[in-house]
Amino acid sequence: MSRKYLFQKKYIAFFSVIPLLLITGLVQVECPVCEGSGYVSGAPGMENVVIIKTEGTQRYVNRDMNMCGMYVMYLYDVVLSVVNKGDEDTWGYAKLTLVDLKQGKAIDSQYVILEVPAATSLDVSYTVWFRSEEDTRLLRDEVHGDIVTDEVPDVTCDGKGRLALNSWFVANGLKDTFIELGRQQVQYTPPVEFDPGSEQWLP
Ligand SMILES: [Zn+2]
Image 1 (cartoon, protein in one colour):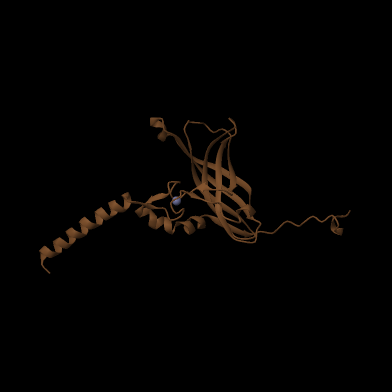
Image 2: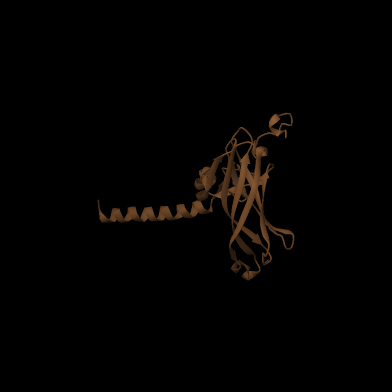
């Protein structure tokens, strides 16, 4: 093989790989998770999922974003203690809201994916950024968790319905990975039903 030919080969490789990377970053394709609508519906079975406890711990505040009057970012570790009382596995979304208890107002909400197997209670950990347009010193803060049963913006494409082609490959395999993060599983034991007729409740 001549040197000239080798050089040409490298040259061709370079000038085809780089544009390919650029193009896949620029080309927008339909999001595989929401199929382009930007929204996903709360899945069946989510009505059986109950949040028992939400614990939010502030880890970091980024005030540098505020230089051009933009916003402040608050990073939280959130642990949701949930239980699926139904007899089918389900997945859907939970809405996490950062609340300033001192001012009595919601700062921001984020949606997270939640998957709970049938008859199971779980602690699921998330790392979530909340955003505020004003620089609020959170002296008494709390994170609220709600199960979403209606339509929510898709977290994969940020509600846009479209993704850059290079993210598509990740997004297509993302759902399961996302859900596997930080999960601790224990078997859910249903509470003993109170039966007024039963002798064990009599004095
Ligand atoms: Zn989407």
